[in-house]
Amino acid sequence: MSAKIAYADVEVGTELPACTFPVDRETLVRYAGASGDFNPIHWNERFAKEVGLPDVIAHGMFTMAEAVRVVTDWAGDPAAVLEYGVRFTKPVIVPDDDKGAALEVSAKVAAKLDDDARTVRVDLTVTSAGQKVLGRSRAVVRLG
Image (cartoon, rainbow, N blue to C red; front, top):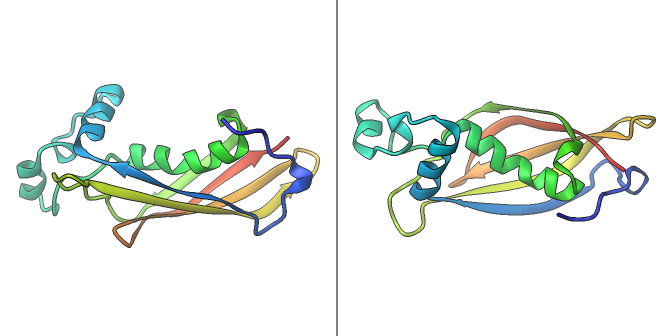
């Protein structure tokens, strides 16, 4: 965990360190076990294709959680995230090969919300295979 960021040191437009998160089938199976979401679209290629998907897809909540790691790592404390919301725009397709998929996340401070509460809004850009997979991905963060 990094040191906490001081509110006074942050300006609108501040870019957070970007990160790429690998996603493979093993990760999805582990997430299914932890979350209890065993929907076969997340692990069974044949089933996923039968229901019209191009391949197995990552869980939406997993995608959301991986993306916000950029914010929690930057803020230095997961509890600093007061609000977080996204719109799911495209699924993260996870092929059964040596590479799997990659979730690319970048973020920047879009607004200073409340000087007394030391809160900022961070907007995230989340893509996989060149496609935006989360829209309106925003977090409200309390800084030190």
